[in-house]
Amino acid sequence: MTTTKPLLGRNIAVIGAGIIGACCAAQLSSAGAKVTIIDRSMPGSSGASRGNAAHIAASEILPMSSPGIALDALSMLLDPMAPLKVPLSQWPKLMPWLSRFLFNSQASIYRENIVKLAQLNRQVLADVERLYALSGLSDQLQRDGALYLYESQQSLKKAASGFAIRQEYGFNCESINPDQLYQLEPELAKIFAGGYRIPQWMTVSNPQKIVTGMVQYSCANGAKFICEEIQQIIPQLQSGGAEVQLRYKNGRNQNFDQVVLAAGVWSKKLLKQLGTAKLLEAERGYNSTYTAAGINIGRALLFGDRGIVATPLAQGIRIGGWAELGGIKRPPNPKYFQAIEAMSLEIFPQLQTQQKYRWMGHRPSTPSSLPIIESSSANQNIVYATGHGHLGLTQAPTTAKLVQQLLLQA
Ligand SMILES: Cc1cc2nc3c(=O)[nH]c(=O)nc-3n(C[C@H](O)[C@H](O)[C@H](O)COP(=O)(O)OP(=O)(O)OC[C@H]3O[C@@H](n4cnc5c(N)ncnc54)[C@H](O)[C@@H]3O)c2cc1C
Image 1: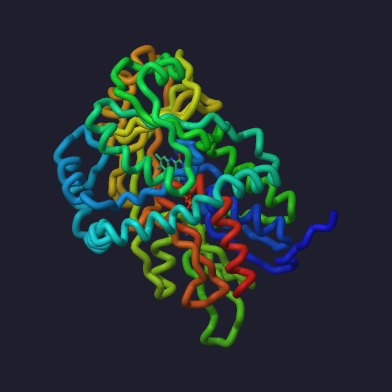
Image 2 (image 1 turned 45 degrees about the horizontal axis):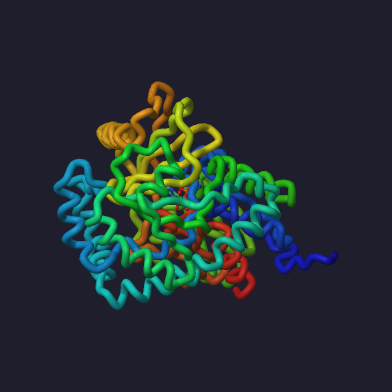
């Protein structure tokens, strides 16, 4: 069998070795590019990709900014156990992002964004299967579906229209009653009024391992990893050069034919320097991984009333979620871990909590819930791949495919 190498010999830098950069590197190196992956930390050791909930959630096509969100958000901000948090000091900095977020909640824009997300996410399952197979990571995929669970008839009713929309766009959602759900998940407390099963949902057994696996595959294809921070991307157009220059923190400069910017929420600074500022904010999420949980769950579980999810992983059961628009500097808030851990015991009364570790990560979030996958207006040889919010693990292989197309068009 002959394989085509459309990027053969191109010297391409990928900034960021999170799941987006790692999948881009795997895709581009398999297409023949000479890839250099650059991250200030070792792959898989930092960033949002390290400890996320491990869901491949293609059916998640509903943007966070939806009609009625302003009122919902207000009531959530007043409730200490609600999943949305905005520290007081962040409000002034967040104004441009929040204004656009509220603007996007108009019904017509909400619908447009659903169409765009559905168009992207319809490609996800095939792209995940393809890139994971190519990189030898298929055995990390758990194809067990997911259950969305609700604790009252009122919340079930409120969620119904969202499942109808998912169904409309081709993602199967099967309504289930409490008897069916306790049969599937006997460890759950008997507090649920019902829910939905989403059979196409997948999880990975360890999200960190997907990052390192993609980087290892890239390196086996000739890619190089450099552990350094990028301080600036210089488009070089003024000097007539077709290349892109990267300036490292250690003062060194290096030229590349093309550059992919995949530095998660930290892309914001580099985007601004390039004169192409984007609305991108850190939406912080919290979870605890129970390494001797004493219970088993069979699939991804999403608790609609609490904004948290539970995932069976190779290392135990991970439970968490929430959204704190908390910026990139402040330390994690221990109260949020405690609150989520208390909820976890309400949901799983038999959960053994002695052995656990906590993690907080920064989702790179846009006000539309749509990722930024585009060529830079500063130089078409720079491609942006960031802003994946809640869905970076899900959308990474599709993003990598689209990034390759943009690099080829440049
Ligand atoms: C609690 C939580 C649960 C989540 N659950 C899921 C889920 O179940 N499914 C899903 O699809 N998504 C989930 N997400 C979202 C997902 O984790 C993110 O969308 C995704 O990890 C973003 O990947 P990234 O590669 O863009 O960024 P990151 O993983 O943040 O990686 C960015 C990398 O860039 C590097 N970097 C930054 N600046 C520089 C620089 N100047 N020079 C060099 N390197 C730099 C960083 O060191 C880092 O390694 C979750 C997120 C959180 C927080």
